[in-house]
Image (cartoon, rainbow, N blue to C red; front, side):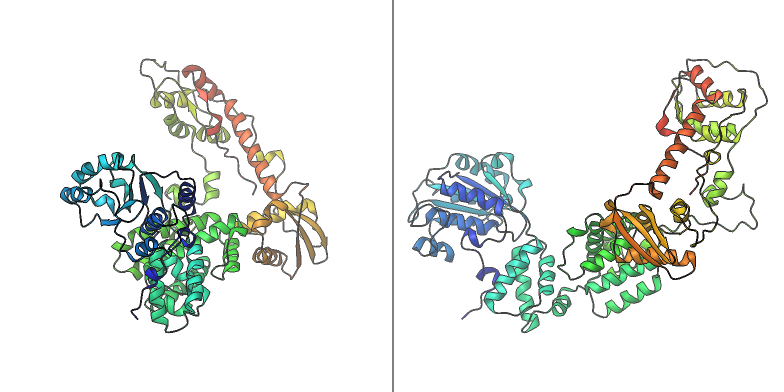
Length: 609
C-alpha cells in the first residue's frame, strides 16, 4: 500500500477535527445550523493554517445528502467523493496557474447551469490574489449576484492584493497562526494513534519550528519519524533541525551575567561541533530573554514546557531589568544584521560581545596623571568632581539661554557693568533651570546675566538641613532599626537585589541573627537567589557568618526606598525655591515676561546616598 504523508492522512474531515481557528468555526457552524448562508466566503491566512481544508469541509456541509448541516455524515456519496477530490460539483481552481481573463470567463460559462449531483455548485478558488485585474473584473458581477445554486469559496495568503470591490462582496475570515501549545497537543494525538513513541521536549521543538503552520508541523513530524528510526527523541530532533540544547542558552546567559567573554566563546565553540543553525541560536536566545523579562513582571506566567522554569526565575532575579532590555534589543537588532555578517557564527559572537561591551558598568575614570581637571573631557570626569566643580554664572546663563525664545523687535537696554559676586549655589540653580521668555535673544540674556547685580543667596544646600546618612561603619552589637537606612547604603547591593532590599525594614537583631521585613508588594521578585545575595552582602559587611531571615509583611515605617524618594522631593523643592528667589532670575522674568517651568528644574545639591 502506498504511504500517505501525515499532512494528507490527518487532514480534518469535519469541523471538530480542526486544530484551532475556533473564531472562524463558530461563525460557520452557526450559519449552517441556522440556514443563514452567504454566497461568497473569503479565507485568509499564512500557509498551512487550514484555509483550503475549511473550504472543503464547508463544501461537504453544503452538499451532504442528509441535508445542509455543520456535521456532515462522511458516509454518503457526496461526502466521500468530496473527500477523494472527485465530486463533479466542486470545482477547484488554482488561480496561480489560471491567471488570464480567458480562463476566468471559461470558468464562469457554466455558472448558470444547475449542479449535476449536489445541492450547490461550489467554486473553490485557491490563491485568488494571483488573478489578473481583468480576471477580477470578469468575476465581479457573478461574484456579487450568483445564481442561488452557486457558492464561491476563495482562499488567499495575501488579501492586500485583492481589489476592494472583491473584498466587499465576500464574508472574510482571517485564520490565525496556531500556537506551539496547540500544535504539540495535535501531534501528540497523531503519534498516539500512529503508535510512535516520543519525548515531549522533542514535540515542543517541532511545534516552535513550524511557526504556526499545521502542515509544516506535520511535515517536520514526518521527517522526525524517518530520522529517528523509532522513538522521537529531543536530541535527534535538535540534530536535524539544527537547534541546540536549551542548557547552552542558559550557559550563555550565565556568561553575560559574569561578564566572561572567554567562557562565552568557548561555549559557542563547543556548540559548533554539532553544526547548529546559529541564526536559530540567536532566535532561541531572544525567546529566552523574553521569558526572563516576563518572569520579572509576572513570575506565575512562566510555563515549564522546556523544563527550565526555575532557571528562568533565577535569571529573572539576577539580571537588572534595564540590562535585560538592553540584551534583548541588541539581540533583536543583531538578527536584522545577521545576513550581512561574514557568517552566522560570527554574527552571533559579535551580538554577544556587543551585549558585554554595552552592559552598564558605571562611569569610567580616566587616569589623569598628565591632565589637569580642566583638560579632562566632561564625560570622562569623576561624577563627584562634576558636582563639586560648578560653572561660573556667565557660562551657566549661556547654556540656560538656549531655553529662551527671542523676539527681535524688543530692544534691550544695556545696564552698567558691575562686579559679579558669583555664588556657587546660585550658579548651579541657574544652570539646571528652565525659563521660557517671550522676548530677547540668547546674547542679550547673556549680557544681562554678566552685568546684573548679584546678591548673596541665603538658601542652604539640603545637606545642611539634617537627615544626613551616617557613613561610619556600623557595629552588629549596637545595630538598631534607626541605623537601617545608613546600613542599607553601605551594603553595596545593586540591580534587582538592591531594589528588593530597599523595600525592607530592619526587624529583630539578636546576636548573629538578623530579621528583615519585606514589603508584601515585592514578593513576586523575591526568591532563594535574592535571599543568598542579600545574606552575602551582610556577611561581607560585618565580616562574619550571619543568620539572615527575611519575612514578608506590611510596612509601617520608612524604608530606604521611601527615604530616598523623600530626599529627592526635598532636594527638588529646595532647588525650585532657591531658583524662584534668585534676584537675577526675577529680573529676567520681569524684563522679558518670562515664565518658570518647574518641571525642568533639577537640583544640584549633593545626594546623600
